[in-house]
Image (cartoon, rainbow, N blue to C red):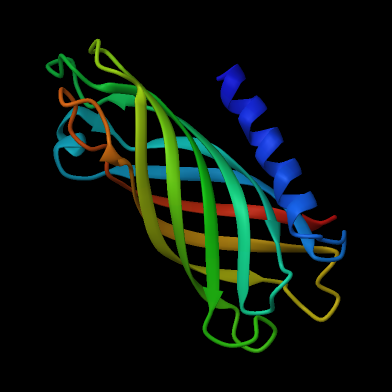
Length: 184
């Protein structure tokens, strides 16, 4: 977890410096998530709460980019589940595409690539590479957009879709979240 936090800070510094971004285009968000397991994962784990931290850029009006750090602690569904996931930490570069100007129509489609560390009761590797896709909506986003806004979203995520241990199935989940965002 400590190494993932270092990686997040380095990536955030790179995002800020490489893009020549000003404080008026950056935002920082924090909020809760609710993860609902899907597929094989649904038979071993129950829905769980977690949290997310986002640093993002509004440099382009209809295309926002960012970096998301998420953590979810999972519980097994029942005592008969011998092998189950216990926690997931993901670091995800992301992009949001707004169908129109966010001030006029604040709906967006959201895509991300996820680097994950997923703990389980098995001895398989934690490392994973995956993806996610979803929809979102901004609340209280107005012409004074540098102050604060709320971001509501729902994503379908498989943080170990592309790369994972052969001994592990994909961890697929529908994740619903709300972030409270501040302009930097």
